[in-house]
Length: 178
Length: 290
Image (cartoon, each protein chain N blue to C red):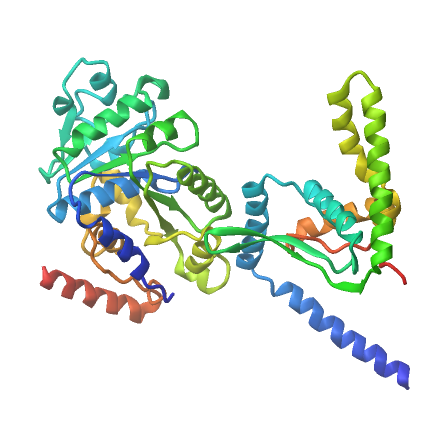
């Protein structure tokens, strides 16, 4: 008996969800697509670059606070004539001071190591550029979970691009467990 | 459609002190949104309001402003002849058939955009400022040299767009380019080819949507009007047709440019038989007033 009701409930819910989707008018589609495309035009940031910026921000901020990576929202919003980069980060837990310092020390050590390597090389400038580019990949430990899901993320994002609903995409990256 | 034009008027009034020699470029980025039609109509409406107006067609190689004004047979010299000193500037100005306040400086049809430079256009505008209240520059589509030339001498701009995605996107690009140019002191948005019925049924972006997305000041809302085609065919701007709603909308734009506080037309009422009858009577009353 209970099953019949839940089935019915789901069917009714499904019906309304469907009609909701159909109700998105041509005008709304146009507005949403336009807003998305204008964000790209105005900032010269492709979805890939936005994704990268998002990852780098997560990596940077994770050193200081433990946050809900899934719920982090990043996107451009228009405030009158001004474009604003909006970043919303739900904080899960404050890190211990010692913990932060340990992470930072680790980072510093890595940087110093990288510098030593580049100094020893003859082509100095080229190498510093390279190390800068590589650095996000080197410090994988911190953003590991986000990275492992990266292929899934891009698929997910592409699907959302089509819908053109959101400037920033939510990812399926696992949340940090305490 | 509850838009006020207070903001637009505010800015216009600031400029109200200098009534003569305003150089306004009419641009859009995308082609076919009605730049030239807008130019011909605003120019004619301003001239009808007693202002001395000159229109410059900078669309070298693809001139059309002469056609919309019905002046194609009167062109002797073009802007390129002026620049290359085959004639004096005043010789190249073609007077309108009806209104002596209105002149056209035509584009050359056989040359390309490189035939005139930014500096030369600036000089021409400066020269014309002395004798005219308004210099309207008709800009070619695109963002290349033709656009850069047209904008060079102007201090104000009207960005023409339609409630279509591609036109709005291009308008956004143009606005970005205008903002980067110091000489452009103000720009305003003219929304052309608005279809109230489609907006009502949520099939088209509304005026508010476009204004919000572009966050620009509005100077006019022009309804889609088949009369535009017939008026182009006749070479007679639609502002001369007192009954036309689009003509009315363009006349209102001209009044706003001069600095008058004119409310935006309510386009949503224009449906059904009753509305048509009402419109008919409104047209009669409008005639009586004049």
